[in-house]
Length: 194
Image (cartoon, rainbow, N blue to C red; front, side, top):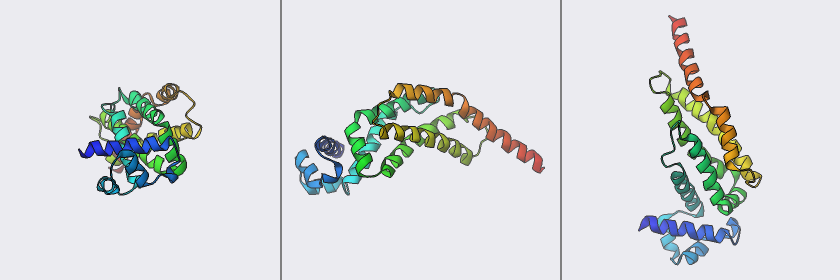
């Protein structure tokens, strides 16, 4: 029942965003559109921003379900683009009303989860420090989120498939090369110190 109510509240918020900007929507508006009372809203969420964050995380989980491997990361990125595109009024409204930072945090979390899965998979059998794996995932996370934010800012005009295709050309083999470099540097430093 709890998930059903949360999804109904999410649907009401997205419905209201088709009619007016986020900063003009109140909890009473959402509750009325959903057919519940305000206290039911507060039972599930602290405020509208909490509902937005939950909605973003839910959309992200659905977009990335099973797409966190080296062979499927492109499909995962494409599905992130498609999830953003499907929620265009919601994302644009949040982007322009709440702050770019809220969208960035959402995309960083989402993208990092995908990339760290790919890095961990490629690192199997290698002696690479956790902090180096995290650094690699962070590097690609910032690049991807930058592309995504630019795409959102420019009205989501370019086809996501083309962006992911170009990204694929850049990344192909680079994660493994970076892991090997960190492993090699670590081994070399260890040998120099002895």
